[in-house]
Length: 303
Image 1 (cartoon, rainbow, N blue to C red):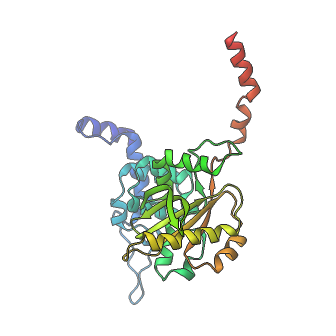
Image 2 (cartoon, rainbow, N blue to C red):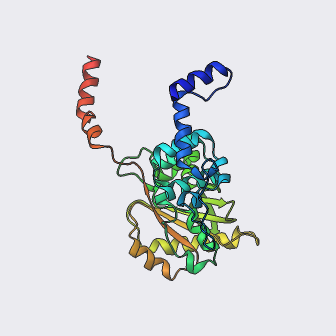
Image 3 (cartoon, rainbow, N blue to C red):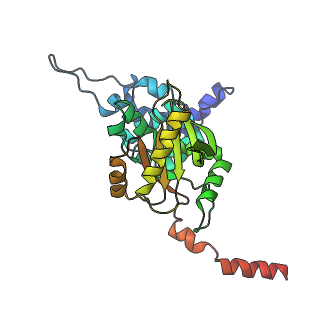
């Protein structure tokens, strides 16, 4: 029936696009996925009892579905099968204005698993609901797989790479981050100090100090970024701004050490990890040539 319907619609409405066989199948899948749009009548509950609300109805209100472009829906239906996860990506798409490509990238990087997992002291240093908003604005881990760094890289190389790829870095940080400066200079007690990366969050209305570290988390990192947050609050923060937030990014944060290190710190600080590259699938990794093979090929070509 569907192939015939697609041909008939094309013959009857040749100027109309979007009624291919593939698209009609997607429309049918959409109808089956979200029956609460009024296409299927709901059963009437017995008198005196509350009507049963299907899980899909409770999650996917029509206004949310209508706010998402059709191409996004096609990707969501194909790639996300769990209903709560599907709802998370829908809300994030509307909230952040993700394009179709960005949505696919966020799904493939499992953004819903990383949001709000930063080790922090926000709950004890910020009033509710501000603490929850700040927690959800950060993630763990951050994926910097757009960078190519050798294993023994220096922190300054990481910092430079993130600034060079600032658009991708901001995208990974999430909506609301505005870049203020790299190696931002602070003059304190006639001494010079430099913040690795300084941002201002437009929604949280506060400065965000980011300290980049290579390797494992160390407890002394908390004291250093607490110092930076104090200085930013005194020198840069406007009276209408919220308290400055610190974020330590390191490769392997020990969550137990981080929780102890942050317990007695005055400023709201979080600790998250970052990943530079994700592991290649075994079958692909084994098919790649070794460095020795590449060198032999180049030498043979030169001859």
